[in-house]
Image (tube, rainbow, N blue to C red; front, side, top):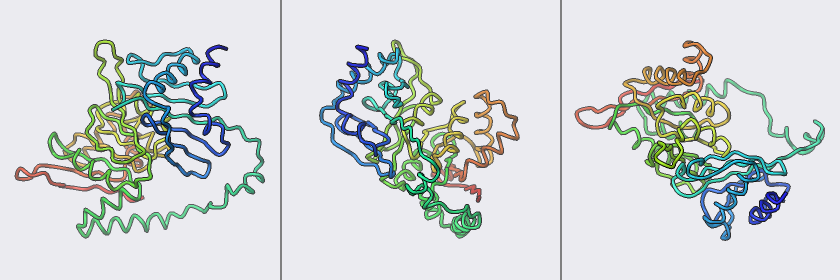
Length: 326
């Protein structure tokens, strides 16, 4: 009982938004501000001066205490449920680039009929899936590629939310190209970046940088796989994964396929076909109970574009592009 009383006190700075019926998510990327998403899909930034780093740490600890968990440098990931049913995800240092990140998704129970939903406009924007329209859009991308206009192709592919893998060897310029592609993402989108070391530029205001932790003395080991699971609760529009190296490959594929198209990553491989095979091999290390052919098929369905980088006469160059029209 006392834990909930203390929790309510620490949640007070968020109360104006948590109490609003039109608010679905309250997101904290850094001290002093929050991002609020409403039922119409709009997201806006609000000042919250009282939410300094100390206040956020105390709030996170109180949420952990109320759910009989801990959150600290040894346990930087916290997934919990508030007394009112709201779901909370906390990612604390050292698993973030800076301070603590938090997402609160409100618990909504609506006793509505199909007729009620129709009157609320749920179905107003619905349309029948038109494969021909999708093929037409992809044909435009194919034409750009065929004409050799790779710059326009890549810019358009990013804006159309194609999932892109950048493949190449060490020092081939994968991160440089990744940073360039990130600049083409709409500034209104929310990005979650997962890396071993901070290399991706985060110029988007609504973004969170997560960092894998190697498990030094007094700190937990937090790998990319665990951060991917946490990232899905941070309400991303896209996930940027610095590099696919291990079992997190399958979690990345599932994340893309569960509502996050347009995500970007890199991988060490010497060809686009080799990159897709490498992703499939890494996915199998997760222990997923699928055969090689099924995993290959799944990879092919999720990944839209593979850009191959190589060194040509000492210079970094795109040597090949694989595009899979739908």
